[in-house]
Image 1 (cartoon, rainbow, N blue to C red):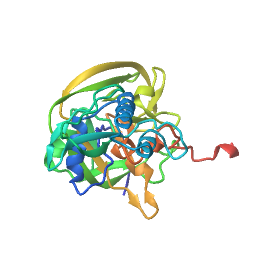
Image 2: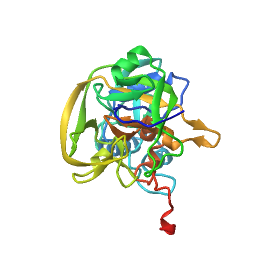
Image 3: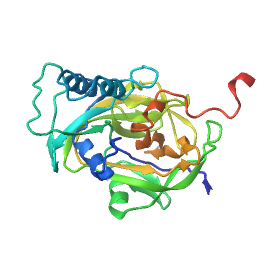
Image 4: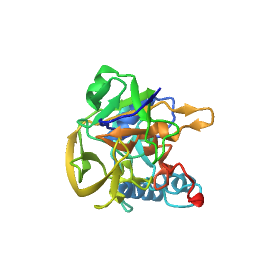
Length: 288
């Protein structure tokens, strides 16, 4: 089912990329409570390695990709008490801090990012605030079509694989981006967005003068970027775009506040696609 979308919005947040016998959604929630920036994540890894809470091999995986390049968004360890997943330890984020864990010796791996709950998603039934969709367990969401590109922004409806909700209210650092045509989008510093070049970038790497892609395919220049604080819970959603050869990348791009935005897949297992060209023109560049 292909759709042409003329007006809509969306919102996403954070998830962990850890696979234990624990409920994945609970892990996502707990990682949100311990959500830290990329810079703090590097510091957490430096501290954990120095204190021998992680191995050198784990440190390298958390910090670097398969080619030895620094990840645009790093993985980092979080700790809880064995047998009591709700007992959480806010570990240090800098070398030289005390190494003691005070009994919080079990560990999961997290990756940071989030959206505010007032942002809206485009679902099969129309535009809804992420909190409302989560509360109602809405099951179908609009994403890019498999064959969509910069010359042909088209959409399809997919099942929702999962929602997440943070357990407690916490303070989040948020970037509010405003555009020339009156658009507004609030995301965490390291939330992935699609630029008019077809590249995916973290919000913290986007500059005034860059352009987002509106849902109708038009480019909308960013005119201001302001950092604000948000206190409360955040929510996320992950579309189901699994194909025979793996995840269909277009299926993890949604419409966020009227702009193309990466789902939480790109905040976790798909984070290696950040800073890469995702949407291409239909005609290969070497034939132009």
